[in-house]
Image 1 (tube, rainbow, N blue to C red):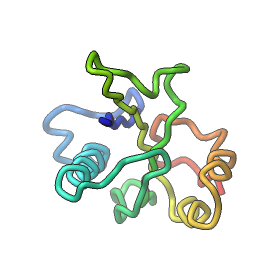
Image 2 (image 1 turned 90 degrees about the vertical axis):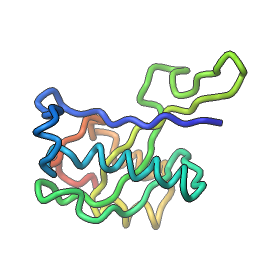
Image 3 (image 1 turned 120 degrees about the vertical axis):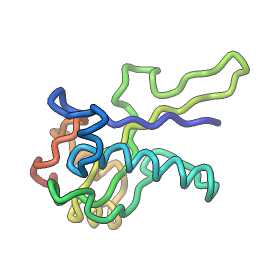
Image 4 (image 1 turned 180 degrees about the vertical axis):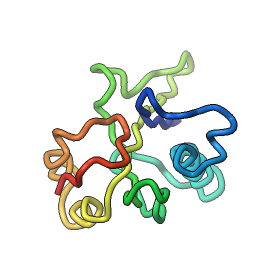
Length: 131
């Protein structure tokens, strides 16, 4: 099985070469790179609800955890089969606050998703905590 990771960034997010040298714009790229490194070097298995502590993502946000979610793409879009029949799972990376990660550590993924029902999948470094 294969995996594709994605983060939805707002239209104002700067992705040019110079801006990506600044932490406030670069951290989503670092998160994806770190997760890929975990897959390749540590043989980690990325799955729905996979997540972890990343340290403070940047000074521009108090978020410090991430979690993978599915169900954001249109129905049936979270898994795609290659011509070889190998499935490719698409996971969306959602940054979390400490309080949300603590909630997840003591509850199910479903309960966290219920709490986050009104949270956009598009990154907002200043959104309020869902818990």
